[in-house]
Image (cartoon, rainbow, N blue to C red; front, side, top):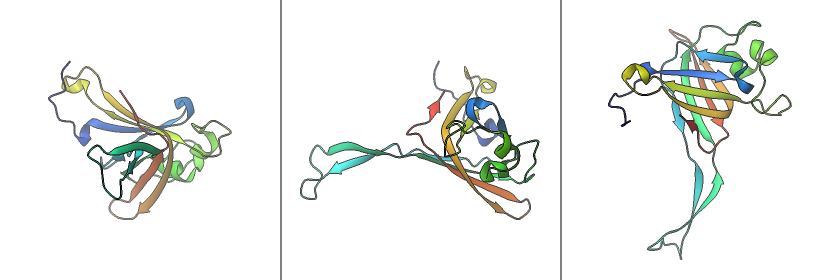
Length: 165
């Protein structure tokens, strides 16, 4: 099948945060649709010859670099013992702190989760919906009061490249 002729917009996307084996998950709702993902991949070592790039550059891969991401959602709830909230993803409190299992495993020192971005395709004639998954994510957040209040989520996925389907 050829590449889709339908442009995708923020109205086609959805975000899902899940724990180990997706036993628990949270669909991000009431979000701005401003997801940003930076995929730096491996660093590149450029070995110069007396400060110059050669006619054929001398390039080698260096250290892997993790993926970073951010998005904004509208604040609807802070915490509850019976259901997950975005605030709990950041603070590891409430239901997330008590019941979710890190994607690093139950004994993993660093608590990580998966973030899946799904883009609607079949409704637009594509053969399938499209997904980009970031595994082993740590999450940070900030809150902004306003009309409405917002939670700004940023994080790091400790992968070189996302899984794309």
